[in-house]
Image (cartoon, rainbow over all chains, first blue to last red; front, side, top):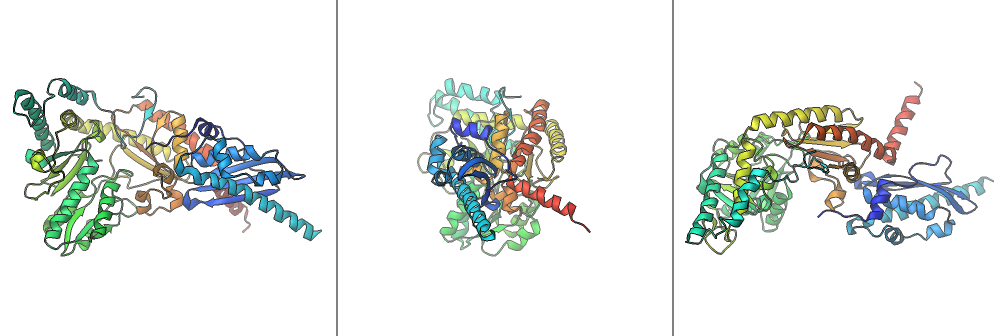
Length: 131
Length: 402
């Protein structure tokens, strides 16, 4: 039962886009846990409501790395409202599909973005309170 | 690279058929193609092939030809042996089975099925070194124990169980002893008489024979029940026309693998040493399973901070075939039950790598692994939040004033 990945998954896995961290990120989100075998950490730079940069660090399988890579590509340059609408199905479709057992990895990418945006918003609220 | 386009370091998954084994098979398709049950010459030719193969295989284990039953492989042999062992016990009211925590699924899932049929199962611990302790087997045996089944060599970590001692304890207690020797046959010297083995499973494709064929040794005197009803093949216990070419290929492959065994073993052992010493230099790496009591062709590592499937995929991109006990390679969410049985935490067990090799691997194969593996581990760690956290934590600790 060899697992076959699409060419796009293989490409995003072999040459992942946006790997790394952002020291001055406006929002950081981490989801998953090591016991289950995947952790995704998403870093977002946000200017005027637009995601100007996105980076990720992922501990996980090939599908987890490929979905992280694709998801960051899909939200870069987008307004946060739009990024928030990104679903795991959209990421899977952009990758030309994933084996059924790997779908949960794409959920993680969606959740990581949401977590990073939540972090961004709570930082914003803190700023307002401190002002 | 033995196989041309890639380096094959997954010999415990399966092996390439040897030329001699393939050569033994070919005439069975074209010349000795008869049905061994037929009375005519074509049938007699095929029957002769099967019976000679049976005798040759028996000789490799110091068994009698009548004690060898051909099967479709190791899983079938395991299923048959365990179900029969359990059934024989149940006839005498014995419904307790003993095994180890890190058996192959062919054994564990059969035991699970038997549990649902009312059997009680004790799984012996295998400890950090991946070895069953004979005294723990002794303590686990009860009045109503029907069967003990413990694998000879573990498929993931390669540890060699103290089979002879386990067999002796079972014999002294009057309990049937089966061993799944799929990873041992063709690699280690096995003597079913001296080692007190009542039943033993083998699979041809693990020692350069064909796939889809295996055998079950059953000691004379053990009343083995039928597996498949039908014709009189395999002493009437497993009906169906024999897979003559595969049986011939298995016998030849087994004999060949035991020829110059020590010399081949020494070569493989040297490759194991070389790989082990070099891979160990990668920081935060551990060897899984006992360092000494393991087969020459197995190494199993865990690399902290990375996940096994991505490790395999990157190695595959570099032309290296290996395997892992990570959840993602098994299609489940749980990491390898073998590594968990060794007491590894799940997050570490996800990052395992099994390299399995033999005399068909070249020095160049080992060199490529040693060139690529450290790079791949470093690359995956550079994108791992788990690894980054560990590094940050260590840095903070270094900076902490006294």
